[in-house]
Image (cartoon, rainbow, N blue to C red):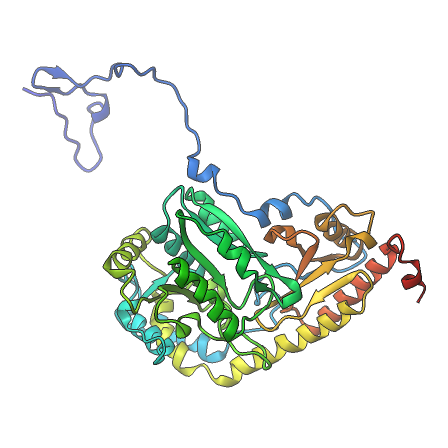
Length: 454
């Protein structure tokens, strides 16, 4: 008789099942040496984890300086509009979440790509004659970051490359390199309000290019591309047969003198995966609801890319169901006044910051047109004691307790990024401290004494 042991209700006076030899077919199950393997502990991190690198974290975490204890810290570095409490979401958005929670309907699993009703709402909200959408064209994700991750994972294989803006959002590199995908950086031109250097962009494309990432409006630049420039970008993609990943998380967050043009409305030839979410426009980045809009009117993606996105979405089974349940009310009931007030505040702060920093010798800000940021060039020849933008921003923290991100984080040395979501009084104080810092460290460049004497 085979010596199996059965334990009832977790109680037994017999030895543990794991300690009892089981004889099956005349062979003992007692552990022995596995042929060719010497048993020893060797637990190492995966290649994927080793290849995962966040430039912002690497640079910021290595900054060991402490702020000036005599000055309150002002952080202009975090792209989270909720940090200071001056930009709350609309009460209708909060009520929508409360209603969804109280309904008791959204406590279980949803389909991995999101509830059909929620996808229908997104499709309806973003549908337009130039870029029609149905629920089947929408995949809901855990924030816009996951939307970008799914798009990269479905479009590119290890060994292929993607085209990424410089300066650009660091997550593109972080995600791609963890998947074994090469990054090729195309240049944005500060003297042209951060338009793309199209000739240089096209020169990067080869047979291994899997997609082009277009971020509009831009993080970190705060730039908004014109219709004509977007059409030129699309012409390059059409000519080279390269699909586009459009990161449009700041879509519609443009100032009154600019207009946001969704990329997919300008082309029926180029297949586009557009990524967006609730985070920035509705001021709820922690709620983690994003989406992918599949624009493929010539059926170039076909069913394969759509099916691939569905399969990839099944790895984490979709975003929070309660937020999905609130989505209909969020999209339908948020008043236009809320969007208008948010943008009015951001434009006012952007104008204030740009004007203040443009008056400081040695700094050259680039005027933003949208999003929540502006970039500032440091004329390093006037600050010879600092080797680069990282040292400049470190000393700014140490002396003035103002923290801006060095643009090395965005592959663009000798600039820094300012977040413009802070309260106005804080923005004024920060600009005043930056001015004091620059005045203390500014030196006339060689051969420019005449200019300094003016």
